Amino acid sequence: MITLIVGISTGPSQVFSADSLRLSVEGATLPSTAIEIENASINLTIDLGNDAPLETFVTAHTPAGAALQRTNLGYWVPWSGKLRDLVDNFNSRKDNQINFKILKDEDLSQELFPIRIMVAYKTAIAFKFGVFELLNRPSE
Image (cartoon, rainbow, N blue to C red; front, top):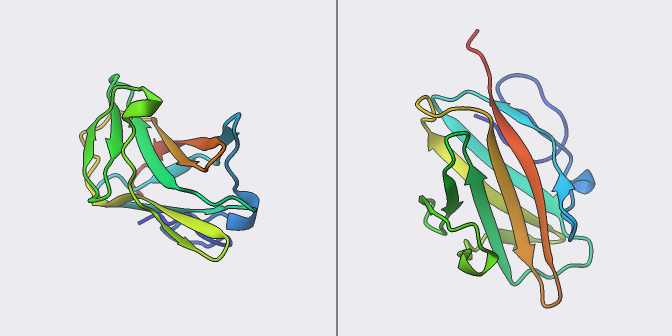
C-alpha cells in the first residue's frame, strides 16, 4: 500500500510532505512513486495555499495509450483528453489541504508501466495541476 501524505516512512508506504506539494497553472512535477502492483492504494495530499477548489480531477495515461479519469465513486472510465470532459470527483478538503484519492486496493498486475497520473483542481479563476509517474516496484 502506498500513501502520499506527510513525512517520510519506511516499509511498503512511500510518503511525501504535503507542505511541499502544490499544483500550478503551468503544471507541477510531483515525485514518482513505485507501487506494489497487486494491491495498490494511493492518496495524495496537496497544499492549497490560498486556493479554494470548486472541482477536483484525477486522470491516468497508460503506456498502452489509454486515457482514463477517476469518478467520485472510484471507477476508472475513458477520458477524451479534453478539459471540458473531466468529471469532478469531489476529493475531500480539510484545513488548507486537499486529499486526492487515486487508487484503493487495486490489482495493476496486468498493466504496463509507467502510468502517468495527473491530479488537478479548478478554482473560480484558474485550473491547476500536477503530474507524477507510477512505477512498478519489483517484488522482494
